[in-house]
Amino acid sequence: MWRTVMVLTCLLATASASYGQDGGTALAGVADAEEMNEETAEKFSYLERHPLRVNYASEQKLAASGLMSRYQAASLADYRRLHGDLLSVAELAAVDGFGATFAESMRPFLSFESSRLPGQAEKQKKLGHELELRTAYKFPGFTAAGRYKAEYGESMEAAISYRDRLNGYLSVCGKRRPWRIIAGSYNARFGQGLTLWSGMSIGGITTPEAAYKRSSGVSPTWTYSGAGLKGLAASMGIGKIRLAAFGAKDIAGGNLTWLRRDGEAGLTFKASPASQPGKVACKLAGDFKLCVRGIDAFGEASWDFMGGCFAALAGSAFPVGEKGRGAMVIRHYPATFDPSGAGAMRSSTKVTDETGILATVRYGPLLFSADAAVRPESGKRQLKLLLQHEWKVSGRITLKTRATERLRDYDRRTRTDLRADLAVAGEPLSFNVRMNVLRCRKFGTACYAEAGYRKEKGALWLRATAFHVDNWDDRIYVYERDAPGNFSVPACYGRGFGLSAYASAKFGRLRLYLKGGLTTRKEKPGRAELKFQLDHAF
Image (cartoon, rainbow, N blue to C red; front, top):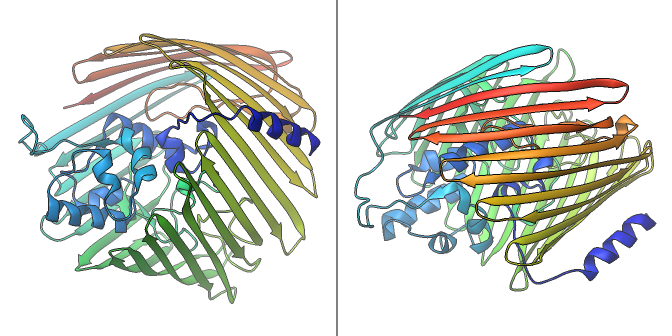
């Protein structure tokens, strides 16, 4: 613990008034890309290349994007009907349910194209297509993947993808009323994820902006990871009421949500196979979210009929001064609560046998979070601490320092992780350097230096990595640049070094991506890979 106290003191001493953050990590509830899962990274990568057109997208498409809740999507749709198109992030911040901090974090993933602006009178094309093909050679195997998507305005879309398995969907939407029917792959995500949150879910939360989940209801998905459900789903809006029903292999349920001007309240029912073989888990849950003058209150309580118990979580996100935001969340998941299909916040691996409290605050360039949890069944206790500071050295140079500590009273009692990232951003050249030290079983270190050349028509990045990690529990994950839709976070383990190169080129609507890498390790197998990807929108 003394190591963490020393590091926290040093970081606090270097605090400055500058501040910057990446919208994707803030919206996902993580402080760094290494903490994302594959589905989340894939979603934000797609939205960076295809920003959500907030003035032309239907309410269903706004919610299905995953950037906002159904309440926020309905609020935005109402605002457009009353006031016309939105022209800036500042105007979005004034819409009920958004706010300045949240709207700003969405900036990289939004497009404010508008018929109110000169030369932008045409709406979205009636028929659109997108094709993506990729190949990869990872010693000693070869893989191929691809996906295709076709859209006919807002009324119909179909997609298919293949990597390890085949995924796809057909979705039909209403033009005048908010209804949708989906056949194939889809996500069903309601409330705070305590009863149902299909697909992958971020467990722990480190940022105030993502302390609460933004449920999307039923929405189609064509992710390579195959996460989600496969079957039939439908949703419909009647005034301020939103109804949803879904069915897939061994799972069925529905949701009713009442949208208000200042929030939403919902009921969800789900029946599915329990984590115990031969058992069926039925759950009935109620959830709410209110937003009043920049303060968000949210929660969900779920009754597990099989376990005969309640699980619940509740919290609030609120302003801290003029340039900060904080959040607190409490949770209680009994040991008899079945975790199947749930994706609520937790510090353990599943939503069961856990009672905890989270506190997080972001103030200017400083981010701090503390998460304390106990497992009542076993009596095990755990405390996670994070302190991150982003220091703007100059207009081009940024230094980000980060310290995390995990304390618990059982195996691997302490885990200390210290990291420093120095970035020199320029046009067309950029440089990044990282140093990472971790202590768990023993000491582990990893560092890298990379240089990049970026132009409108393409980019080239070169990276060299060195690591010394003798114990698997001390492994260090390092995010690597990769083609869109890929998620590359290799674990540094052993003693060795790696070289990687990433290149992209744009020819009209055609985009080409190439990535190659070679890793050598002393007394352990190395790794070699070569990836090629082609994207074409037409």
